Image (cartoon, rainbow, N blue to C red; front, side, top):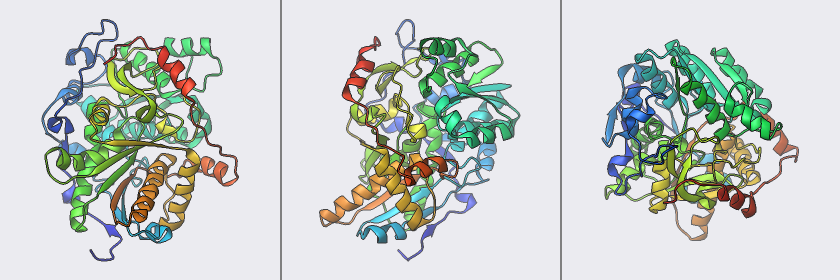
Length: 454
């Protein structure tokens, strides 16, 4: 290829369909179970929480799902997103490998999350929904859904994990600017929140707790639906627009990745970039290594167990087959933000169980070191979540050099870190410390599980 650094697409090249990886999986994900009876549930059980079109997408086995014209038109506000060849990073590492990144930070919310927030708000609006309740960890999902709801005239209520609510005030203000109401979670506004605060008045919150609060609001109000920013099948499918664009861009570059890397919280980030490339692997085409990278403080893929578990802390959601640390797990309040979820999506969990994908866990000091190097060589200050992917890319490039080979590596730079400069300040001042959850803590959390084993 030429020395072009930026690989772009035309607006007309925005994909017309999302890719559903379930169609190509030999082993389909196991069905969700009713939280009470623990028996498999059908689409009708999800009707109180989601509009029917999203429920259909959640359970479909069709390979391609058409993107509505209205959604595609709104995507064009910032899509297609650019792909870059990281020449600066390559030079700093002295590596023979080629490094590419897909940059999702140019969206109005500054991350990849609007890729699913817009279609979710669209389908809710088509069914006359007036209000959506949701949760957010680091604030990217809450920002994205607030933006999307504003586009469709839908009220948005967000339960934000307390440690992020207090540590990232500008994310909250961003949501408020787009008209959303934001609460620190756990709150006294729901029975779920009250029960958590009764047990621990100083609870820092968790994504599982915030999910419980948002689900309760949706389940107890007829005019309100619930939206989730990761984990679920339809969410992961919406995000494949990232990888579908990346396929076209790699073709324009005359290249193809040996390794695809992305941060991992619940799965949307990783699925978005990796699933379209895994399509070729699953159907007998080009091989690729897909690596999901999580923090050592919340290592469900690398140290959790594969079993049915609740998606929330209180136990209101259906039971999902997942790699989990236990729904009562409260992660350390590190700066990985949205990567603090106790479980993984069913699709990603099944792919990991079957050895189709890989997972690694990296501590936050190594991640921030990678983020600083990236910002100084590629100019973009990455979100803390994205630094996990960068750290893994550096590891892979160094390993390839040690083996005397050259690899082509692609990663998802899922968002910018402009609202996370407080964490960069802590790192640069030497106040940021590593935290790796102990096996005792994991064992104690898993010992509380009474959910079905697999």
